[in-house]
Image 1 (cartoon, rainbow, N blue to C red):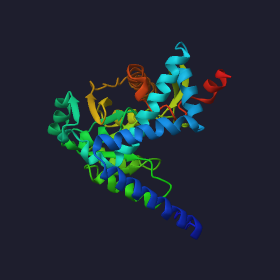
Image 2 (cartoon, helix red, strand yellow):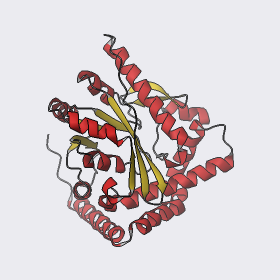
Image 3 (cartoon, helix red, strand yellow):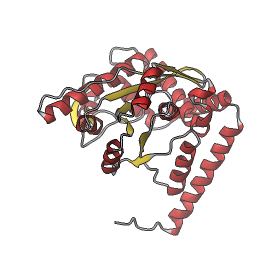
Image 4 (cartoon, rainbow, N blue to C red):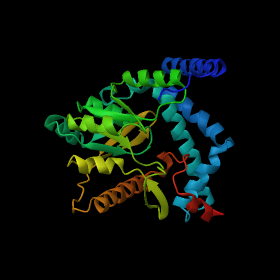
Length: 303
């Protein structure tokens, strides 16, 4: 079913927003890499705490680390705003933040070389750690053919620019989130890998726990890995200093096949949640705390 055409006013607002996006992109690309990153970090570290989203981040942090004191929470909140601001400012210059630029260290890169050499489809998973765009940039530069998923922007003009921005650093395969199952299965059937973020709330997902509180997690990555008899391949991104990064290619998650498909999927999702929690505990200031990750009953408990 075709989407209804936007009103003239809506179209005008979208175009104006796209102009703003273009100006921001031009400014970031005109600056040296480290200066652009630092500017974004300063901006959100300054403005982020003034927004309503700051309350969501603070509540999330309280759910995950209730034993930490106020000083620790305030420090991590400030650091996560800076991290998020840097990531957004770095998006227009991602072509300058690939391993070949010398700004990205890859740990266990031999695993990516193996995946590329064997041509066996795997399901890459990761979370919104540090600058999460560095992960797909590293995958495609390693020679792995991989279908990346994304959530299309509401503004079609901005959405096109986001795709074009990703083209600059080699990411050319997309499957829109929410309507991607067929595209993903076709890709894996051709021997292409897929990459998905698996750390955000998914209302229709499987119930589980994250930091001891109820969450719903998308089972799609685990289902696909089981369907194609392959592994979940976790990766994570760490910021070392400024606009420099470490990408870690972790050991693959070999999923258990017991004959009880529902139980196997649930077990896989539990392992995904455990992997994500471990990464967040390692570097809490670099996770994307501003999204509402937990189920409503977890937040109700804070009251």
